[in-house]
Amino acid sequence: MGKTAVFVLTILHNLIEDPKPCSALILCHTRELAYQIKNEIKRFSKYMQSVRSEVIYGGEPFDNHVKLLQGNNAPHIIVGTPGRILALAQGKHLPLDNLKMFVLDECDKLLDQVSMRSDIQKIFRETPLNKQVMMFTATLSEPIKETCRKFMRTPTEVLIENDAKLTLHGLKQYYVELRDDEKISKLISLIDQLAFNQVIIFVKSRRYAIKLAEILNKDMIPSKAIHRDLSMDERIKIYEGFKQFKHRILVATELFGRGIDIEKINIVFNFDMPAESDSYLHRVGRAGRFGTKGLAITFVESEKDKEVLGEIQKRFEVKIAPLPATIESATYMNN
Image (cartoon, rainbow, N blue to C red):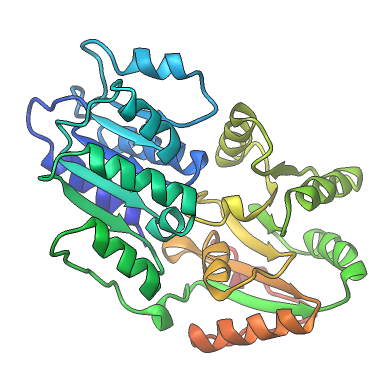
């Protein structure tokens, strides 16, 4: 949907000529997303040499961040995760008196987690009352809307179409019914059969991400697994390698299901069915972005999986057909 460009360009457009440190703060729910947004700010501000931006998240030495925020080179725009930002603010290392713009990206994910929601509420109490608050999400439930209203005074809600129109038009979507013990062999067969630029395979747990990547590598299908238990350096290295096309197949948990933009992904496998329809939309949205073509294949193994598949088709008004014996590459590969 291009949410990142919307708020990054808005922030850059509204920065005064001589911005003060921490004029804008962007919070997101994963370190990978924070890192990606920082790179987008760098890209869009290429000709704004005086604008400084930094990314701040947990897992890095606290003292390094303290030093980063001191002196004449303190950043004007900060992207970060709630826990580390709160610790710096409460320690008076990150003064928020100059804050004019406050963005929550994928705000439903931020506000849906009790610990993050609590941290964000505390960060709000540290910030001035005259800030502009922007909250972005692709899907927003009523309970989360109520929480948003607690953060905001007389908010304006901008709705870009509705759920039924969120289906990605360039994306071919199919499902395969099979037993759990048939899934790996079917996945390997499809990877051998299909043409692809890059592939992302979603699984339900960290343990299975590791296991599946090991199996694929042993079968001479080079793959990387990404999950929360990796160190931040390892996660960023894998993310960068995938973005730079050094890796072509990624096995991921739900960690990678939101916000991450890798333009060359054209095939998504739901090796494990997501628990609910929102997750499905975000997962398959990694392919077929911005008018490009893509292919999403979902493995269905249980009655619960069938129920979720039915909910997806009903909610997004899309027909997900059984996987045909052959698929023309022209239907999911750009020329």
